[in-house]
Image (cartoon, rainbow, N blue to C red):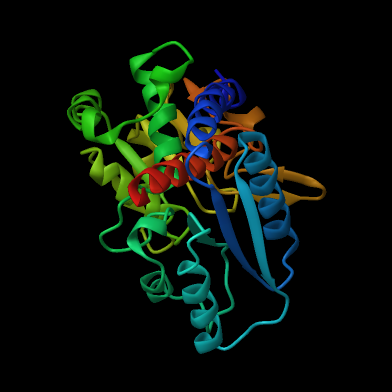
Length: 288
């Protein structure tokens, strides 16, 4: 069964619109996004974030550095924007050029404005991880699609621990925008998992035994013969096949063997972006 990502995202959007409207009476809400270079896919992701910000009534500012600056210049720009009281939160669009690609960049963003969850002691869980938890909650707890589906990790750790105590969860990938933040969130939710990556020998043995597989690779890595019947498949990675965007498996191949699967595009992505703005709203409350 296809996971209804669009319906879930619409329910979350409704909640966030109300919260943003309340906050705007006392606070200005604005996200500042840094983009380096002109990568086509990242430009399209930024446009999606800007579009969702407009829907929610949240300001959006793009700082687009078309040529790659030195680390010092980039760090200074981030620091300068972070100190602006009108900036509620800052994000840095990945991938970055090699000389800039380091987690230390996030040390120049104040804790209450770093809403992607990259800092060592972040006030926020990564949006992509929260999106995955929301989908898992929908599948295994089966609440109705509405406000109750949103994840509150402080209240639900024991719930997630109980739900997944006897389930085998496999996370594929360890990248800074996929595997790492999802792994961090699963750990916070007390969900035990096996992390498979390109160095793992015979990963198919783990796939065959898994109840849940979360993929964040950007290549086709899963085929139907690798799966146990009834498995839940959640994809975060994306790849281009001609003009089409696809995930780490072909949906037509796996839909008859999986219990649930997310589609690409339209599955996890919209939920991920909305949790980014949920974190921004929480950041505004923290700053107030």
